[in-house]
Length: 271
Image (cartoon, rainbow, N blue to C red; front, side, top):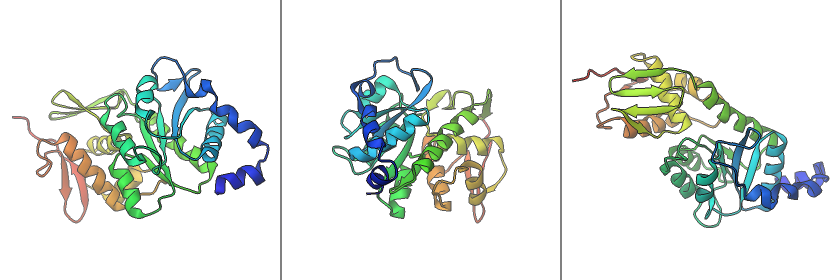
């Protein structure tokens, strides 16, 4: 195993250091609900059944300035997240109990957790699995074995995007409101939960309303961290957004398809 080899051969000194990240204090925090742990550190929930991998992930995350909690199975993750509201979930897919797919569904279905980031970290390499991860609301999909430095870089990129997009403005297009400051989408005054990627895509199109963008242009503008994406990924996110904001997703008023080119946001007339 890659991470065991790393620990045993590259940094054997870590074997004495890693268990300290799995202490009772780290597993059972009692601080008030917040997207940051005490001291202003972003809190990451690491859901991984392999203890060696989990220890090394926690070591690198803690070294990089993050607070971590490790879960070897999925059963208590959502309940604990509702107490502590992590900034990011790092999910293995093949875990005891509900698998990572189902756990992501539970996270996205929970209003308090819907704005948290989700990155899949898994040995499942098929393109269908990657697409499925995006469809379920994942912000990124990383395949094992992986570079710890790349993992940290991609976590930082996901968290940075939400900070960069938080601008003090509200875009209004008909009954649609996009609050860039709080990252909230409203339709006719009702808040609609979105993932970070969904929000950024809708925000980008809305800021350039009526302009047509190709899928490649949208990939360049919204997927800026080098994560695995294809033109089909844009279609997946557009479909999910239509289901959330359109009165009739099959006949959209806002997110229009321009055949042979790509997509645009229209400003519908209010009756």
